[in-house]
Image (cartoon, rainbow, N blue to C red; front, top):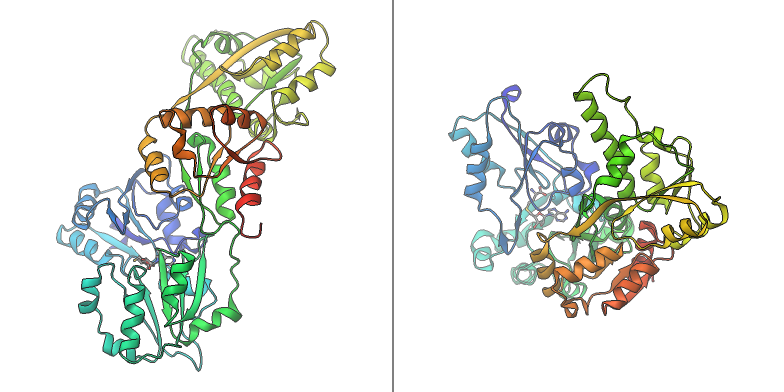
Length: 521
Ligand code: SAH
């Protein structure tokens, strides 16, 4: 019975999270274990609660991460009374999703399960291309067929003679490798070569691409445009309706894979903006945040009330680590003697100060923590901050500077030059993160990246460090820089910068990629 289900076989829809059912979303949001595969959008996975165990069992056509019998066994192993295991699949779980096999396994083990159907790609991908699978006067049925990746099995698993005689629409899933064989087989059994045919790649994803032609040209057209899985093949008169009914805008970065080298906690804004333009995003978090080598200055600021005339934040990371230092301090005193010094908050520390942020992302990080009245310089870099301060700082004013440990001394120099007092707080370091090395190497060697973005000097330095200094691997990839400093760092290391952001923001970086690689450019 549904109420007692321990495992849910759930369809996630074809890509756009908006095409998930309300039921599916509810289940993801309260899952204890989420078992998902390749076709599920990261935006859906993000809906899982923080403590949820995420198990990726994605299968790509050439690279089986986990064989089906092990996925079956995994579901049985994770199932337990009172726990909710959500097995999330692209599209519908029972349409070429092997959900039936998983259900059989659960049933054999007496594990209560439930099925949540999903919007299947065999209807939704054509729909997003303006192709109705049935249409009055054109097609009164549609047939969904496997285009099996293994050509030797294709001949035996599909009854070509019958299929070629069908009057309705044919929709092939998993058929991209065999598209030439599929088209030839249909024609060999009498289907006219001028029958309209379409291929919809990544239907309902921002990166959707569509190619429409005829049965005798479609394979060549698709090869020329380089379409690949996941894609559906639609054969039948309805395919031609795309020309009139297409409604889903192709995005300017559709079909491109853009690599981002930000630390994971900072990547989501960049990812979201790139994906909104249709790019597929590959994350290579080359850096991670670490506490400063000397934690004392930050701890001292958080521990003892003091007032500042100015508080300067040179990054969103600085804002985050600064506020966190106060949380740690508050909880320490809350655990201890009730008569300990009154809790001192970050907001209290900043109360009398004019707060200055290097740019919009830093200002936003402050705003989300309740600090709304913030100045930003005209140019979003240390020089901009220094200029802004120089005009306004009075002698003996106290300036709190919250910065990265390896920051340049531009701002500190300006404070000293004005005769003001500097309370210098190195709040964090960014350190090299080694665990993504293999992914990055593989993506570069296999030529999978159409662009690689750098949102800081340290990201550029850490990327080159991960490659053991071998910058030749980056030679064929257009590289994008967030601003002049990052560009200088990149050029010093021998990297060629394709384009630099017009303003040093995530939006500026995305604009640089768009300007250089966008379809319309
Ligand atoms: N259960 C899924 C199908 C899984 S089989 C469903 O109901 O949609 C995997 C195949 O589905 C892929 O090879 C591709 O043919 C198709 N597919 C899945 N998502 C797709 C998408 N967004 N656009 C086009 N085809 C897709």
